[in-house]
Amino acid sequence: MAPRAAARLETLGFRNIFEYKPGKLDWMAAGLPTEGESSMHPRAADGARKDVPICLLDELVADVRKRAELEHWNEAVAVDRQGTVLGQLRSKQLEDDRGETVERAMLSGPSTFRPYVPMKEIADYLAEHDLESAPITTSDGRLVGLLRREDAARLAEGCPDCARKMI
Image 1: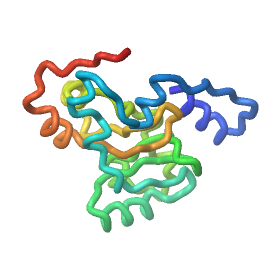
Image 2 (image 1 turned 90 degrees about the vertical axis):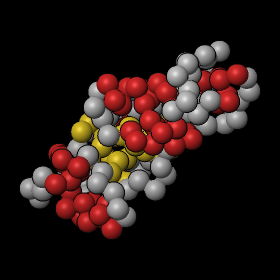
Image 3 (image 1 turned 30 degrees about the horizontal axis):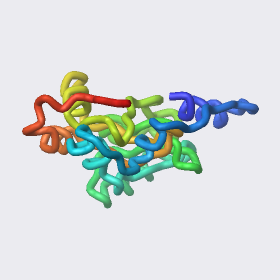
């Protein structure tokens, strides 16, 4: 969450914010190829939809809703100009139009997952928390795509023992 928190703090006027340096998990979080047993199971990046509508904090929700509907989506992801996820507009926020900006209407700090997380883990999480989707991000918080619960469940099917085996 550090990169996302840093990006949000910058939008609020804070300066001199420091972020961590990349490592092995960052390689995996970038969705780059890996080897080994766990690399053969579906991961978050395999189902992330890259065509999800994105929006900036100063946009009006009504404008985002129109764009999302044209693209057959009922949600959008709020990002900064570098593509770092700052929030999410689910269908409830898009429908509740009071002339607000994305910044005021969005769900701040949505649950995000890295591209290497096993699909089964995300499918279980989304079902357990009754979430329709989750943003997939790199380790520096940049949007890779949005994984829908039905896609995660479908891709995790037949992989009941898929567990995260990291290093």
